[in-house]
Length: 125
Image 1 (cartoon, rainbow, N blue to C red):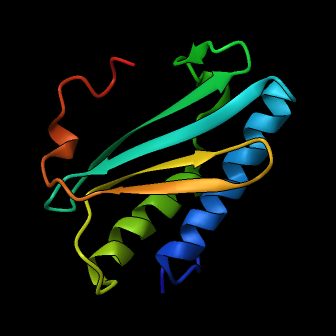
Image 2 (cartoon, rainbow, N blue to C red):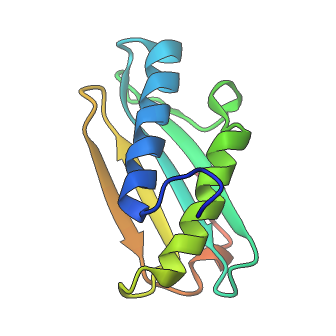
């Protein structure tokens, strides 16, 4: 059993999507096009790096997202996701980008590159 009580990657992605939507919609109301959460795990599973970005309707990309930082419960979800991805039986992936839109829909892109967490330009944008 995971810390969050959620038992599949899909459940965790849905929960993260819901949380991101709530936070960003509260903060930016109808002024945002999408928010994305880009998480990359080290191949040994020991750590991860992540970033949140908000694209506003005026096409400004907000990279200083202190107002919408992940809280402890969200971090536990990411830890659970790391644990579950290793046992899911699917092809091994090392990162994901979860994009959430104002209508509540989302898109998940998995990264299969084991070196994705080593990208020196990760925090540039």
